[in-house]
Structures are given as C-alpha cells and as structure tokens.
Picture: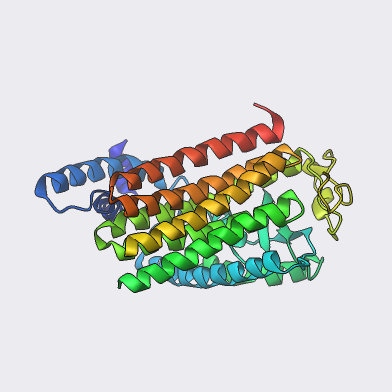
Length: 173
Length: 122
Length: 86
C-alpha cells in the first residue's frame, strides 16, 4: 500500500506541507515551546500526516505548491474586504426604519469542477454583500438575494460569481 | 496595543448586536439568515481577535477559534436554509422572484411568494 | 480598567442574545427558531472569550472551542431533521 503511494510524484511534497501545517496547528493549540510538548506534537503530526495523505488527493484538493498558496492568500484578502462591505450593507438595511429589501431567489452557474471548489465558492458567496447560497445542483447555484438587481442567468453570474471564480480557477486549475 | 484591541473588540460587539437585531426585525426566514450569518460571523471574528490582541499570550488560540467560526458558520446556516426551503417555509410578500421551480428537486415544495404577511400576528 | 470596558461590551452582547431569544420564543415556524439558535450559539462563543478575559481564566477558551464544535454538529443534525425528518 505504502509503496504504491510513494510512486505518486506528489506524495513526498504533499506529506511535507501537511506535516508543517499540522505542527503549526499544534503550536497554536498548546502555545508553549517546552521540548516534551514539541516532541509529542512532532510525533502526532507525523502519524496524522501519514494517514491523511492517503485520502488527501481523493478529496479533490489540488497538489500543494507555492503559487497556489500565494493566490490563496490574495483570495483571502479580497474575501475579507468583501465581508466588511457586506456587513455595512446588512447593517444599513437592518437599521433603516423602512428596511429597503427586495428579496428573491435567482440561479447562477459556475465553471468549477471539484466539489471542494464549489463548496468554497458557496461559502464565499454566503459571506459577501446581500447574497447567500441555498443549494448546489450540478453546476447551478441557487442564490437568495436580498436586493434583486437582475433576474437573468448571465447577468446574475457576472455580478455575483465572477470576482471569486477567477481566483478559484487558478487555485484549482 | 491595548487601545487597538479595545477598538476592534468594540466594533465586533456592535456588529454582533446589529446581527441579533436583524434576527428580530427582518420579515422572513431567508432574510433573517442573511443578517444572522454575515453580521455574527464578522462580529465574533473581530471580538475574539480583539481579545487576542489585548492579551498577546492568548493570540494563537483566539485565532484558531476565530478561523473555526469563520469556516463553520456559513455551512450551518446554509444547511438550515436548504432544509427550510425544501420543507416549504414561505417567503415574505415583498419577494419579487423565485427561480427554484425550474429544478426537479423543488417541484414538490409548497414554498411560494405571498403567503406570509409582512407584519407579525399578535 | 480594561476589564471594566470589556465587561460593558459583554453586557451589550448579552442584550443581543436577549433579542434573538425573543425571536426564538415568537418565531412562527420551526426554521425561525433554528436560525435564532444558530445566531445565539455564535454570539455565546464570543461572549465566553470575553468573560474568560474578564475573569482571567484560560480554560474559557477551551470551553468556547468545544462549544462551537458541538453547536456546529448539532445544527447540521437539526437541519437534516428540518429537511425530511430523521
């Protein structure tokens, strides 16, 4: 079993990335640098990385690389500004005495293939101004929109989905 | 540094209050989920990070809790919204469009516009 | 000094929890109550961290982490129940 996996060319690289990721989580959880704790953490991270690595590529994650991590960081910064905009938007609608809402359910389509990518897109849409995802059916997303601007498929896709999809397409190329 | 953390915690607190006010004020389930998800996610994130900045020894654990909230909160509200839409909870009478009838899964649901009145019944 | 200000912030958050609690009591359908519970759990996670700072107890952070995990699992189970029954 192990020998067959080693032949996969991504195996060693993935293993190292996972190992360092788990060690960072361990350090965040314990918040100490005593050597007993460090040794236990390294052991546990090693074993977990060994077990998780087998299922990692099956889940639909792409193999890790420096470029993908950099694009992900840019993506998170963009997402954070969108979240702040969304909050001021919702706060305005809630506090305004007449509540300027015009809700409705529209459909958009996505070009992403993997389930994980669709999940990240749906979560991002949930956190951005005025929209959240009701359901994912094949390559269509059902969106509840608090202030419907357009009902067409293409226009709605352009307004809601485009700004995240261009980053996600690079990450999950 | 402490003042900076205080300001961040204060902003987060105000967003949490607005989110909870939105839960009380907005007319139907879907709009309530909008307010509940967005405001409480950013509010909880900023509040927890602010405590981490005031007390630097706690920072990493606070960051872990904040990231966990940021990842799981949209998923749980998405699950609740999907469940309530499939079980036929109606939308409020201000709604303008419902395109979900195009799909097979939603043909059977009873959810249509203009059932619930905008004012709450006493 | 900073403890006092954080305590005032906790009072504001507690007021918010009260508002959601009203929705949980009033809510016309089961979904409204579920949404209110979802909001209350997220708010309580933030409140626990603030109280941990006021009382200088590190354990409260662990409590809030475990609470958020359990609330997530419970709400997903509740959503399955709303969809088609267990």
